[in-house]
Image 1 (cartoon, one colour):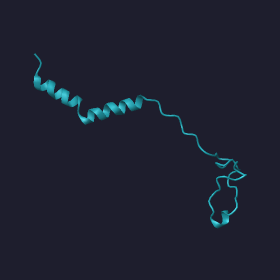
Image 2: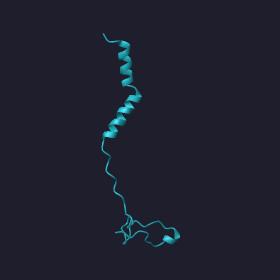
Image 3: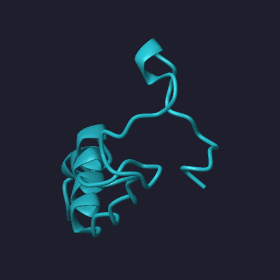
Image 4: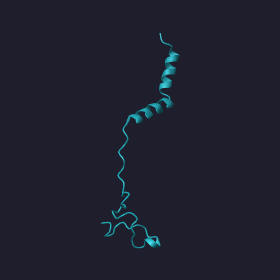
Amino acid sequence: MANPKHERAARAAANSSAAKWRRRAAAAARRPAPPPLPTLGSREHCWCGAPRNHTWPGQDTGTPHPRDTKETS
């Protein structure tokens, strides 16, 4: 006959928060990594498609990069 205290202790250890965390961590390690998110721009081009480090009207005065212009369309 099995020891009831031992069985109860084994069940408690299996259901502890540490054991649950270890199971989740092991399951996460088995899952494949998600694909990388698409990036805007590249080393050669700005996100708008123009060459990197290009200028736009008002850049000298601190105007932010335009979003809808003939250059970016």
